[in-house]
Length: 283
Image 1: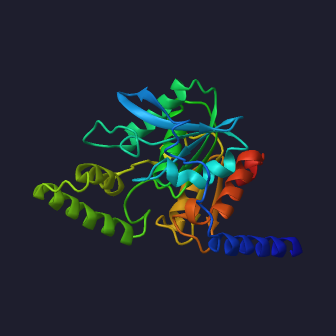
Image 2: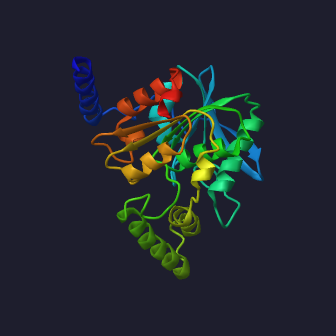
Image 3: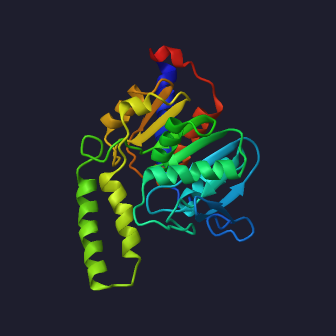
């Protein structure tokens, strides 16, 4: 009981420190635009931009919807001394080409699987945030690459309000109407067609069944903040359908944990990735 109380104090001190850090993204390395490191791979008909850091077991870092490599800077900085980091801009994001008028999680998953094959990686770990978490789960379902462990932060199986808080899709639908209006006006201040594709993914995808989740046979850590876009009960639902699952609902934290609370997020993810656990006790 005493040890548990001490752990709770330490956890909330970590929250305080993380929330009050003003130097979370001040790095010497220009992650996402590193001319000395960045490369392109020809994957599924597009040029996919990626960067590599560190040595050791490969760890894929997969960003969320509308983001890019730079959004994972805190994770690159933390994990590059522990793993061989492979981080890329997903199709239609950052420096990677789009070349489709209907972006899907299936396509992005296929691209990442293609990158693993391109780099001839024997086995990988995956850390994905939001859409990146969805991609990680889908890679686990597909079994086209050998995966050791998956960390999925803020992932969902479906886009309806049983999985996500209602205010999120409501805002996205408003944005979609705006994007359509800008396209009709012929506005060129932004790539509105791309923005429309990205938001359509959020509203209509993914569509992952419980039977699909049960196909994942590697350890998976499901992470959400208790103030997340993803409902707490949906995170529990995903966890309950995993044979080797762990669940972490972080108190007082929202969907932006990898960027806004990296101290807590990285330490929890690292513990899961490096330690062995007895999954038989979940039965």
